[in-house]
Length: 299
Image (cartoon, rainbow, N blue to C red):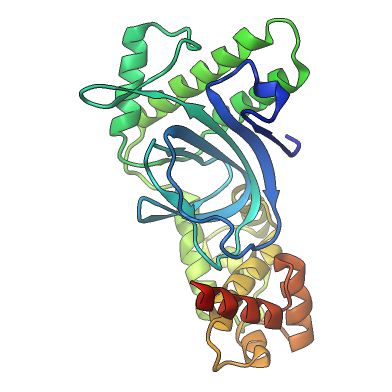
């Protein structure tokens, strides 16, 4: 999927589809302070993680997202990224305008949907009553979103009907996954979190791939493949993102020097730290600290 952004009222591709408010694919490669504030909307917002790792707050609950995860934001619910957290990856999202069915506020689709009313009511009820906004490993959703992109951008014969059918398919998929989803945790991501916590507790250590793999009981080849699958990074690059995200937290403490932070987070020199930090965030450590202090004073 290539990057693009379609907005209702602006993008000609969406003119026939009044119910599609936004449809986009975006790669986020730098941290942007205050760029993803908590917002609410009257539409259903569906996000799909293509690459990387994201940390979001949805209705005051913290969620960590990996490739293949789908996020369903209900009308009126708030969500946003955490300020100062390094989110690097690639997202696809679609916003669909919906109505509410009184008196239970079940979600209703408009005339664009070809589903029977009883199925729309059933799906709407499932969506409205779901306990978690995150569905894990929903690769089928990525395929459907990819097909929607193809239909909208190529506009071959029948694309209007096919696009709406694909949106129906997406909601059917989500409703079925919500019905089947239980409270079991994803095995590797759970191990992933234990590994990340261990790394954060001793970032100054010169970690090797072999050491990290051993901590989760895997061989280096399998470990590398799984880390790449879930985070979009090689193990060592993933370690660097952890070091930078921890450095971001430490830079908010004015009593720590940049050199001390560099050594505490595992960089062999302040220059190495500064170069890596700017490559990932777009700022030098000093610029980031100054900008963060300035933003805090403005609020």
